[in-house]
Image 1 (cartoon, rainbow, N blue to C red):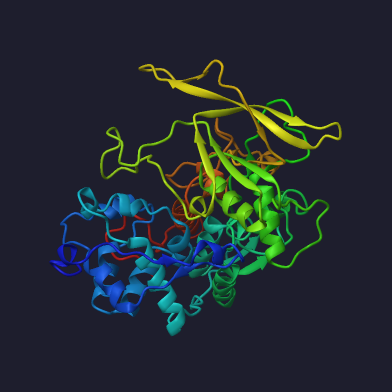
Image 2 (image 1 turned 135 degrees about the vertical axis):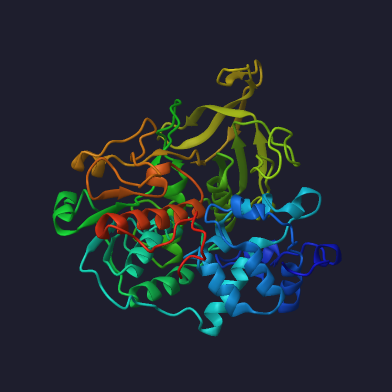
Length: 488
């Protein structure tokens, strides 16, 4: 695959970024595209490695060496066909996926891995530019109808696969526009929303119906949907946010990260009707949580014009290299520095917030922290201990809680009598993605808990196969373990 000696001849090269002082002035994507020759060289680095571990690293099972080889040879249309055979939305994953495939790349054992994610993004963008991505409605309809609840990556992939099988698919979205967290959560500087709109237009032309401002379980009786549709697929995500049960957490100025990010997405979209505008302008901002959501809050706060931005993480600072207990090709928990981090932030690890401080009017003015250490004992859960005499008070007018999610909302599950697991996710096994209620299935974060975009798309595709089997008795929709090239 690629050029036999390509990995010896070419160094890893990725897209460059617009200067920080320029990109902080707006919410647009700021990558600088590579020319075609440079991209071909990157495709040439893909080794004829015998066993492509990148396949196992990718939850979608993308045929990575195959599309790399076609990029190297300049066969972009063939590369796009191969890429779409396993991934419904590479324009999303090519921008947002943390690229576990690259961590599993054989070349990455002792050299820089192949730039798989960037190649993926350029393949799909070339395909859109050349007009190769067009609507492909099914030639026949089965007469069966499916309701997909949630229009995030899992819901959209399930909908497209089921529509390809010939079923009549309706997607219900509680927000005003389709996209789930892609639309109302991911900052525009990572994913401009016209990228979503471009794909939704294709899905609508293929025959999928989208109903927005349709909050199933609140505005729409889910039992009515069960009567009207032959099957239901729950793809509502893991949306219950983890709180912080410490003194002062109810002060004005302490907000959930997703509230902050969602409102900013809406403002960029031109929506301005808010009871309270969440802004970081001229404020000392502290982001609590060191993951991707925390990083997104940092980038957004800097674009608002924050006075200062600080980031807390309760876990110890990871190593820059691969930890010894996380060998290749496994995903390593190492220190990752995002483009938002590089725009300006102070990062602190092994630090815990003990109390939020406020004034007489209930406004946040600061917070108190302590340093912590983790005690690891064989066979036991790690124990968190405070380090004595390490308390510190910080000035803070805006605290953003980026602490992750604890599971799925219970409304629909309670109304339908669906079992939930001990993590409060919808209980449905990977055997058939079916819940205990006949005809009701679950996929994505709502089933597996908070996870990656590639897992969401994979889950939607897998669930669609089993829903199709439930409706028709068999399915031609692909599964990841198919031996043949999946059907586009």
